[in-house]
Length: 79
Image (tube, rainbow, N blue to C red):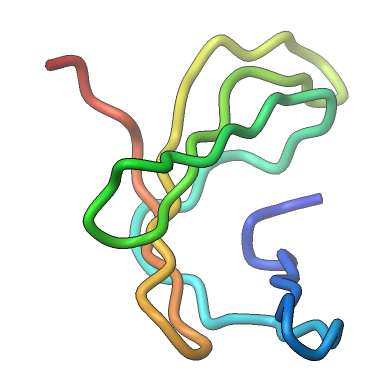
């Protein structure tokens, strides 16, 4: 699954939308972890690690849900 193929569920209706994803898209992967950031000023979540067909990954990426059908993706940077 790649980030350009993500779906977001609307809790109120139970329907799914496929957002427009912009920014620096990470490599397609599986077996990754995803964690929501509850205290963020706007909804976001972090994707960490996973695997491709040929390698283990140890990178992190942030997806910012900017509303509607708009998601901004980019690599996570250390503080």
